Length: 602
Image (cartoon, rainbow, N blue to C red):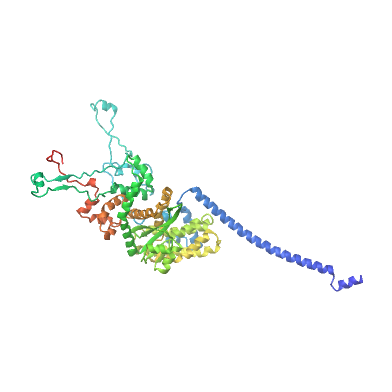
């Protein structure tokens, strides 16, 4: 007891020291576990956020797969956009009435705020001319509200030929009309179709010899007396391709069917069989090769003209698979829209900045494209100015709808107001458009800047809406550039629309057989798309081009482009007009044949 008391008094009890050490170790372990638990809770919260984002992404992809639409419209309800824009204005402290002044400036009945619905700048309106004898159809009257008319179309307004069938009652026919008096008639129409097809154009080139009154007899000619007999044969019209079975009209139909209607040659072969005469795909392929040789210089001239004179070129690209041994090699098809002059397609093996530069050598204007890195080389080293694509910026917000609908709708609403301004400026001159943009678009862009600066601080770094804000931040200078140049479009939808034929066509033919097929595609699509740009019927244009191009100087091929076609046709001389006229429409200058000395009709 004496020893124990002394130990306790000195505070050196062995049991107490062990207990205190155990308590200290336990407290340290508790603190360590507390820190681990806090860390695990943070990791769990991050994992749950990521799970929510991935779940939203999966739901969005399921919707995309379920819709089975290769080009899903990026549309949002108009009323929802208007409400979201009002919320943005209110959150920024703007007066309620300023939304109308800034966004629409009194244009309350604007069309839906969707860049995909912006009509092309070359769209024109026309009124159908009605035959004075036709009575107006109430169903064809325009609705006062501006909506499109419904119901059956009025066939009387069409330019179709009419085959009239008169029907009388059986009783009148039995009496041959005797004792009956016609007091009226009821008229109705139906749209019918006869079996169409090809027809043969036979060129009978007759050979003539001068008659005996002006030509020595055969015996005299054999004896060497007098001049030789004059024998002449009619020449083929210059509008005919010698050595080719197809007339340019047939070749033009094949081109448009394949490169505009996306009908492969094997399907066209089946269609011709139904029409009564089979044209093998090998024959059609020969036609395309001959047509390419006659027209590729026109497209080259269009490209050179655009590079030299255009202020802005819009471009985009898509994959173009080319068949190879045991595989398909992925080539790339680029489209270049030269303002309102030309649409030119080019192909390349590589999707790089050097490849693009090789296609537009010497161009130093504005390039309207997406934010792909292949164009940075042009902006940095080749004096090309970048123009931003607001439709591409809008697409990022549209993709964020499933995960952050409130912010995504607000961003789409503001961008939609910019497109409303562009609709009002479609028919304006560049100077007028620039003034309108300064008055109405510049305040909207400022609102978008303030809203994006505020909202991006409150979004997750891995969310789709963060990508939308990041794209705008990176492309801000290029997206603002349209405010200082009235010639710059604010979107690149025309390029994407031009490539849609190729994307949809791959569902029919899957790949190009070889590089030559890709060359043909780029040439013929350039001509067809340019026809659409200038309101020309592509089949009619190609038929005239195929007749005229072989006789045209190669140094003046630009005059045969769709942009200059009508002016060129109007300036043709008599020989040129005969060349572009189909041979069956040319008034033949023939004579009645007479009997020759052998009694055979010449």
